[in-house]
Image (cartoon, rainbow, N blue to C red; front, side, top):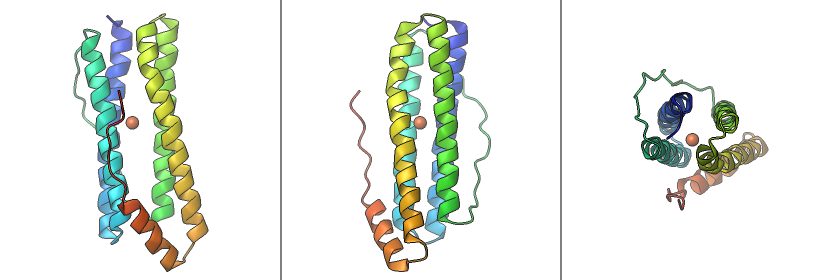
Length: 168
Ligand SMILES: [Fe+2]
């Protein structure tokens, strides 16, 4: 059984993952409105990943005898000034998520809650991967600049991304 404080932080994190789902769906919709179906697919898959994160936390909270409380989520941005802006906002968001996961890890350690600490390791690794993927894509975008053929190819490449649930 996790402490009340730990359960509260896990519940906040669960709701933050749901905000991430909404943010990435908003970004997917923006990409579609810009006729970038491949980029839209990338963000749609990203939203599926965030749902997976949320449900992993949902299950853990119940495993340690807690209960989930759904929170009101703030409205994600709906308009972006272009793909660079989109990816910069994505990176800023993922950094914020990493920061909050680190806070949970710190709390788990301070309480000697080694079970939750172990549970959170998966998310630490995941965040390194998320941030790295987004940085790589932003670098590619900057390389492309205003080259339409290169942008076409990147859109095609991102259109091939599919969601695969990671191994537990
Ligand atoms: Fe996440």
